[in-house]
Amino acid sequence: MTNVLVIGGGPAGLMAAIAAREAGARVLLVEKGDRLGRKLAISGGGRCNVTNAKPLPELMQHVLGNPKFLYSSFHRFSNEDIIRFFEGLGVALKEEDRGRMFPVSDDARTVVRAVVRHMERLGVEVRLHTPVVRILAEERRFVGIETERGEVIPAAACVIATGGASVPQTGSTGDGYRFAASVGHTIVPPYPTAVPITSDHPWIRDRRLQGLSLYNIELSIFRGDKLLTVEPGDLVFTHFGLSGPAALRASHYVTVSLREQPGAKLTASIDVRPDRTFEDWMALFKSARERHPKRRLRTELEGHVPDRLAAFVLHEAQVEGEVPLAQASHESLMRVSRALKRLAIPVTGTLPLEKATVTGGGVSVKEIDPKTMQSKLCAGLYFAGEVMDVHAHTGGYNITIAFSTGHTAGSEAARYALAHARTERV
Image (cartoon, rainbow, N blue to C red; front, top):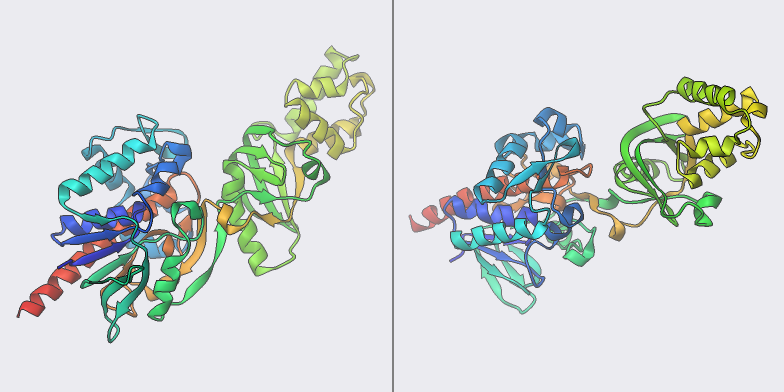
């Protein structure tokens, strides 16, 4: 008889199955799709950002959804443990910018294959094409699951690791919320995070900036005059707004702010060159005016930023770009310098949840024991990963949550199930 059932073959479910088996339990992992690790295979742009190497206190600062809930799990199975785990499987890792850890192969399939082979060696049973329709509980205790084919599979413990409701093509369609709600759990309404930002600026709507990429900028989000966040990194203009790493990280604040205050006036502000101050830009333009008085202001600006961005900056600053530098007024140079430091884009919201990389919301962590990931409402039921109301910035932080909580949930589910089996024998 199976001791521990794991529902979901994503990063949290895979780690839960491995941890449970290593703890001595007989484990069955059920996955409704046709293969394991689909979300792993597309993470990190297909390279699989397995974790982030930053010191734990710094890593925790990038957790946006209920970071305190994760303290115990992160200390029990940390990012350093994740690195050791993969290196132990023969997956060589490398550290890139901002602490992101990738396989040296730059191929997510390296990671997926290593994890699946490890599960096979351990003897974890896997059933693909096996959708679960409901979980079974008696007297506030988990007893089994029922599959779409009508099969009832009994077990002492279960880990729900079905993911959130983002990237639905990987199988994350919110099934876990229904399972949790069936035994009384509160579901914090899911919302998109790590998702592109939308804007109704005319230059966005007219696609005049579409495809323009900016590197090493700083993106700030304001609600009225209140600064919500400043996110460094790269940015991409799209036909609907802003994308790229900086926008994805900033999107959390957009979504949460609009949930708290529907209709709030939000603005994205781009610092095109954070390494240059307003005074630096002014000095640069004045120096250029002395050296090249006949050069057009637009031409000078295009020497420092992409041509389309230069045109946009001049438009937003309401400055004529064809004027020779010698005729450019002090006020016009000030307006251009201010626009380069704070290029404002109105924000209307974000793309919908199904377009998000990460889901906010989910099973309320108030009803889950943070030390074990066990439900406080149903004995033997555990949760791992994005199905819970936990999420973080992109950059290896969310997958760290998945692996860490998966390891805790699997280990504890095994401990519970084996103790239950001993009790039954007595």
